[in-house]
Length: 302
Image 1 (cartoon, rainbow, N blue to C red):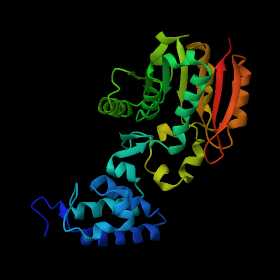
Image 2 (image 1 turned 90 degrees about the horizontal axis):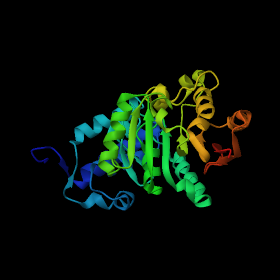
Image 3 (image 1 turned 180 degrees about the vertical axis):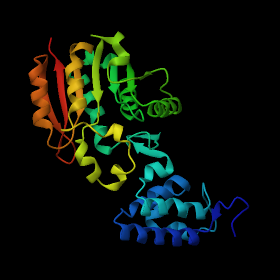
Image 4 (image 1 turned 30 degrees about the vertical axis):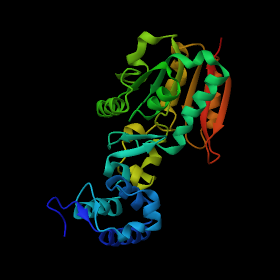
């Protein structure tokens, strides 16, 4: 029997639901491990207990929502391909748990490296580890939080054109305790931070970089549910990257660093765009953990 709030189930009941949910996932071509990610969010169960199925013997397991609602949630994942992070309203990124919604892109594991690249650059040039940094197109605020956490002597200026995204980023900053380290701005790219010309130690951006015509053919989780504003980069996917490359030297101090994320196949063109300005030095392309040329790094010429 459930208690009056219908939020307690037996281990056997939950085991049966988990078994059925994993079978439905496999049939739909969805990773079965997503079932356990969901259960970790809505139960006190640890990953090991789920993997060993030791929870099956427990007489009571508390749920954050009734089992019938959990079932409805999972049906949306299976039938409508709604990303799990949107269904639970949270995404794990680095060591953060971030609030997310369909107003923001779900932060990707590969993007975590952008913070590591910033940290590495600061080790090579400690003067970069102080002062002001900008995160352009902050979305949920993930990169800004990663920078604020790793570069403790900096102020992060986070910009987004979406009021909904910015509201979510502010909410995340408050819960993570970063409100005194990060300033938020509503607007397009550099437009709201004009007062920071020639002041930034670093600029980081994971901009929209997918060619418009490709978006409808992406996996349905992305094409149908993630915000196209955060995906679409124009005809060749490089509209936003061009804008950032063009205007970044106006905002970076001499020797300041620009770190950009891009998609597979864009590295050569992005390197050429950086070179063509004549305003950057030490231009470098870095690969992600899958070996894909994912990031471009450049310093404003002295």
